[in-house]
Length: 122
Image (cartoon, rainbow, N blue to C red; front, side, top):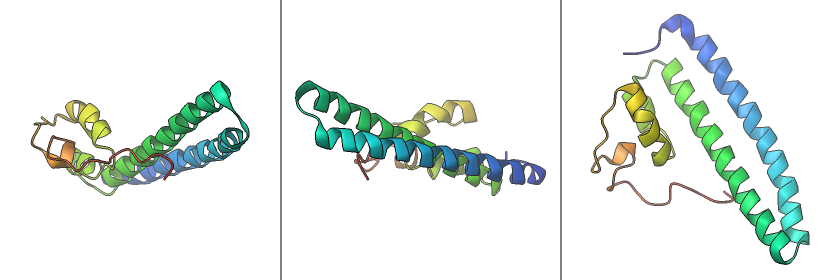
């Protein structure tokens, strides 16, 4: 199952919107980074945690934009999920695409997948 060719422009536009949101999140992350640099104690700890959350949100938005772009290019859901850069996201989305994930499937975040999916402050 692939996306209809007449849906490709919409998929590209959605991916572009997600990328724009990602840039906004990164701008806020920059401000939180400044807060980290100037804070101390518990305030700094909280700011670091929030910065990490923003970084994860940015990575998730980037991954979703890539998934939408892949589907718009005509990739099957399994192919698009296999291209995701975050294996935990691929595992969460797989059932919605009718993809059965085994623990040995490195393309969808199985136990054999490479570690280091989450890159903090990339």
